[in-house]
Image (cartoon, rainbow, N blue to C red; front, side):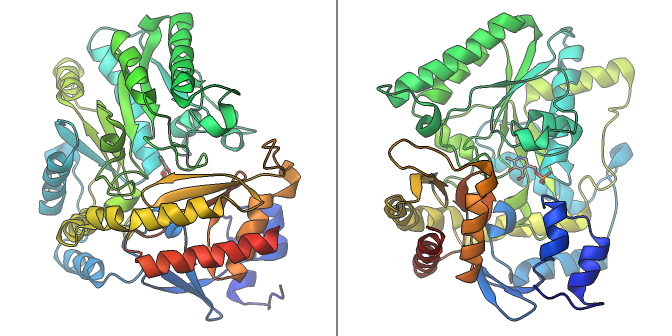
Length: 451
Ligand code: PLP
C-alpha cells in the first residue's frame, strides 16, 4: 500500500504499538483505518463497507450504531461522569447493574465485583481463589488448572491461564501454580475409532490423573470457557462437563466459568454455563456485557467465596483489591442499558431463531476443499483450514493460511480474524437471516479465492 507522509496511516506506523499485530509486518503494510460503524457493518476511511464477521472482537453484540447506548452514556456523563467504589462508596448504576446480574445468573450468586477487562476479571478470580483458600485454612490449595488452547486474557496471571504458545513464548510465562490439561477438541485430538463420549472420558481421566499427580490438596480451581472461542471455537463433546464437574467436586476444586465470550446470548442461552450444565463458583463476564460500547467486566462470586472474603476482613482488615475504574458510572450505565435492550428485544430468542441458518451455512461450507472441520454453536463458528481434508494435515505455520483467507475476506467485504488455522465467525447478535446469508456468500468467495 502507498502511505502518504503525515497521513493517519503513516502516523499510526510512527507512533502506535498495536496489540496482537506482527510488529515487523505492520511497518510494511500499515493499518486499516476504520472511520465509522453502521448496524453490523464498519466503514473504512476510503468508504469501503465490511460486515464485521467477528463482532469486533466477539463483543459488538448490538452492532455499531445503537443510539440508546450513546444516550445512556451521555446522560450519565452529564450527571456523574466518574466516581469510584473504594471505601464503601457507591452510585446508582453500579448497584442496579450488580442487582440485575445476580438476577440473571444461571446459578445462585452472592456478589458482583467490577473491573474493566476480561483479563482483569480473570486476574481477580485467580487472586480470590488464593484468598479464599487462605481464609478457609487451606493455604496449600493454590494451583490452578486451565486447558491447552484456552484463552483467558493477557495480564501476567490471566495470560498464564491462557493455553496458547504465542501468549507465553518469550514473555517468560506461564507463572508457577498454573497447569494446563487436555483441550477437549474431538476433531484434532480424538483417536481413530474413539467416540466423542470416550474422548470426553479420556479428557476427564487425564484431568483426574493431573490432580492426583500434583496432590488434590494442592489444587484450588479449574477455569473454563464453556465453549473455547479464541482457541478455535472448541465445543466440548457430550458428557465432558458432567465428568469434569464430578471430578472437581470429588477433590473440592472451585470451578470458574469464563463467560467473557459466551455470556449474554452468544450460544442461544443467556450464559454458556446453561448450554453446558455448568455449576460454577464464580462467573467472569465482559465484552457483550456492555455490547462493547464501554470497557467493563464483572466477576460474580457465590456466597461460599464471599463469606471467606468477609472472614478475611474480620481477620486482616480491608479487602486489598480494586481498580480506580471498578464500577465506573458511565460503563455501568451503558451495561445496564445493554441488558435492558437484550431483554426488550429478546436478543437471546433472536439468536435461537437465526442460529439454525448460521449453523447450516457453516456446515455447508465445511464441504469446501480447504475446510477440514466446521464447528460451532449459536452465533459462533469456525472453519478449520487444512492442507489435506482426508488426513487432516495442517498447513505449515509459515503459510499463514487463515491470515491469507482473512485478507481475501476483506476483499469480499468481510472482516474476520485468523485464530491459528481457523477462519472464525462470530457476528453481532443483531444479525438478520439475510445478513447471515450475505456473510456466508462472501466467505465462500473468499475461501474460493484462497484455495
Ligand atoms: N476471557 C475470554 C474467554 C476471552 O475471550 C477474552 C478476550 O478475548 C478474555 C478473557 C480477555 O478479555 P480482555 O481482552 O477484555 O482482557
